[in-house]
Length: 239
Image (cartoon, rainbow, N blue to C red; front, side):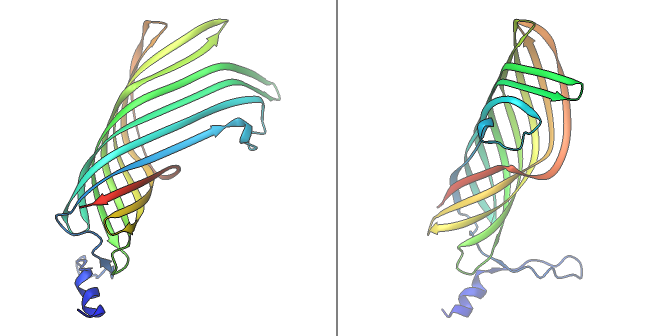
């Protein structure tokens, strides 16, 4: 088969919208019937000792991190289009040992504050690829996902020399969108990077402070800005 025939065979026709041809060249990145297995990982770390942007804060001592890990499985129902599921875990921990704010008439000091949360996440996703070369090595993708999160968080602080310990149960449903890029490093193994976009979410929280019921509330919101702090790295096996 000539290189021209190989390239032609790899092309996926993009249908026109009405009378308009969008002119998109889409190579076959993954064929119909292929399965993919993989895991994505995200880690965000913050340490006040390494930050030079907080000029208004004095004696600022804070450190924290967020870890997310999401194993997933998918199936290509059409060329370059896959559906699948993810089961993930998210953990956040923040320790604020001390911070002081002194601006004009505002003098505020906080210390000994701790926050940690553990969430389990179940996700159904739809992923659409656009192959960028006939060699099936490089492609962009857009992922639409519906996620359900459940878990608990703990917020502790000292108020009037008394320890206040607040436990929160969290339930959340989120519709999100994530653009990304995938590169085959071996015939059946690809690496990927994607950016999280919040989308639409509905969240319910119920709290207890020092073992006593303090109430619950619901909130919802929408935000379609790309979050550059939510960068997910992953590796995928195609079979």
